[in-house]
Amino acid sequence: MKEDFQQIDFDDQLRDDWRALLELAVREDLADGCDLTTDSLVPPTAEGRADVVAREAGVAAGLPAVGITLKRIEPRLTWTANVEDGSPLVPGDCLGTIEGPAAGILKAERIMLNMLGRLSGIASLTGRYVEAVGGTSARIYDTRKTTPGWRRLEKYAVRCGGGQNHRGGLFEAVLIKDNHLALGAAVLDSGGYTPAEAVVKAREATAAGTIIEIEVDTLEQLDEVLPAGPDIVLLDNMSDAQLCEAVARRDSLKSSSELEASGGVNLQTVSSIAQTGVQRISVGALTHSAVGLDLGLDWR
Image (cartoon, rainbow, N blue to C red):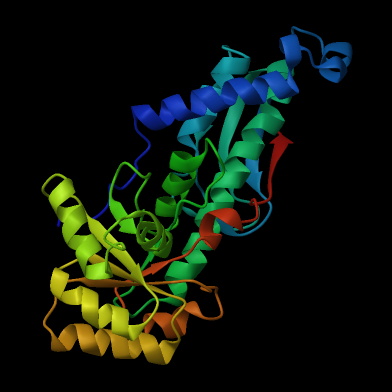
């Protein structure tokens, strides 16, 4: 297989994703550019300078999107970052400074902080998981359990926290799950595919180098599927003892298939899961349960 799934950087595609989301954010917060409070109280000639400040410890993510956000709302605003994405933060750290028309700063404040807080919250939670598996061979992966439209941004934030990106979408890799096998058994004249047959069929139907992964939930299924040579076997909701046995069985066959633990993973269980010897641990909570990092805007 190729080395791994595509890993997301803050590239032109990610900038385009944020610009599309930004249009929705502007529409919901500044319909027709109107901010009744600011427009009533702040002279259009007033200039300002404000810092984006961390109120709690965490990891920064989303800083390259700040300038895009500010320019969309007020082209005369400037942004100077003090830290880079992936930087650890402590309370009081200044992430960067905004300068320009004061009314523009106020109009951009909540949209910018919502974006930064969301992505930094994901990076911060990911960092805690990565720290919890330190000293083992396990890597922390995200999932497709993301906010609609935000997937690439949220997966980028996972990388800022030290995690790895699982497949970005259904187009990127094969992941045969129990529902695929169950449906096949119901609709195919042959009675469907065994897990091993499904791996072979997927390999034949996709381009060379495509990652083929299959989910199993018993050790017997693992034994049956390993000879078919999947790139990754997802071990669904197995106990630590079962995970240890799965690693032993894989190693006894000298199989090159990597093993991925998934299901019920949290900060209390991830360390013991990593110690079983699996190479991958996928965690939906990185994106579906992250709490936004508390950030604020302070006038200089």
